[in-house]
Image (tube, rainbow, N blue to C red; front, side):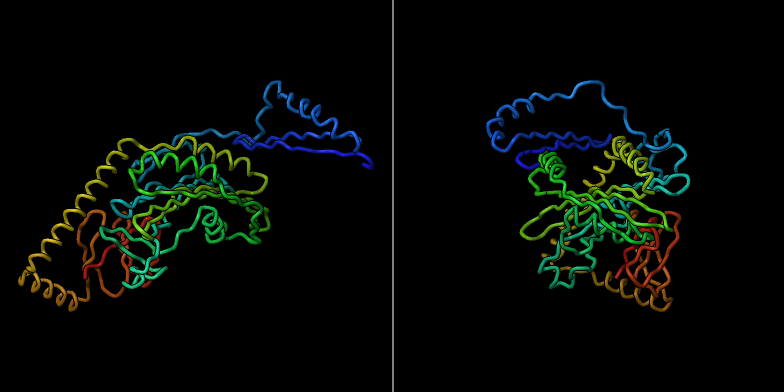
Amino acid sequence: SAGRAAVAALAWTVSPKGSAAFAYVTAAPTGRYADEEETFARVLASFRIAGAPAEERTRGPDLTFVRWQDPREGAFSLEVPSGWSVQGGMFRFASVDTRAAVEIASPDGEIRVMGGDPDIPPFTVPTPTLQMTGFPEGSWYSPGYGVNMMVRRYVAGLDFAREYVTGKAAQGCAGLSFVDQRERPDVSRAVNSIYGRFAGGVSVEITTGEVAYTCSREGRAMSGYCFAGTLVTRISGNMGIWKVEMLHGYLAPSERVAEAQAVLDRGLRTFEFSPAWWGAQQDLTAQTSRIVGETHAQVTQAIDDNYWSRQGVMDELSRRRSNAMLEVEDVVDPVYGREIQVQSGSNYYWLDHRGTIVGTDTYTTPGIDFRELIRRP
């Protein structure tokens, strides 16, 4: 207004139960405002929120939650709405490469809530050494024992969230638009502080970010959310490996977002690893580490002795010649270590939990249940 000065302030907070804000405005004739600043400050500082808390906003239909157990390895459990379909579990690609993933869908299929994705592999940061030895960015590199890593430069959490929504989470949606995106340094600091206490001198760092987006499916307005955290472990110099440590989100009709958010929130709050599985996995990881160390020692000794078995070479040549005549080749299951003979003609071979073997020409998993079989030379 003419001849008046004013200052406005907005206090804003976000919580799992919703958002709250409070607006403050001070005003006075322009010539008097400076004289009243101390009074305004004391009045504003005296504000206190009083009274009973407001009732929680309605989150759609009432939901009854039940505990769901990982059916694959019994590795974890969480609470999900009764009557909703749940898929996923702990996917094992190697002894030290396990990926937890869950997708929860409403009975009508309109809402999908997810956590983790078994199709996302571990990554190794590109280096000049990898480049020179035939592993450029975008290629696959195996340090051994069934572990396969994609060579790719590190992607921060926010960038990965955007990438994941664009490439997968919003598939089948038209008119994708990001309505909000932000880094979450508060979450990153808290998680890095925890990792710092248990890293044992190893350099690990996580970055987190979140995006909200809208799109349309069959003419219906949809709203989605994705939170991602990527963890990088620095080994030495410019070497390092990284993985998607956190990946959570949902896609739902815009009028049912509160329902999807409630399911996601409940799942995250009730997620628990099985102590028995965790202990067994730690033992398996330690055992694999010992195997790697002992194997390297044996290889070193063999090189030092400059000794190799003539009979072993002849057996290997015989095996290759026989396979060529029968048009078969030998592959190894990295999980159980057993050798399998398959029909030749494909570049990659895959095995699911039912024992089905599929060959592909490109490095494309036939399904989330399949793990790669390692080809013998």
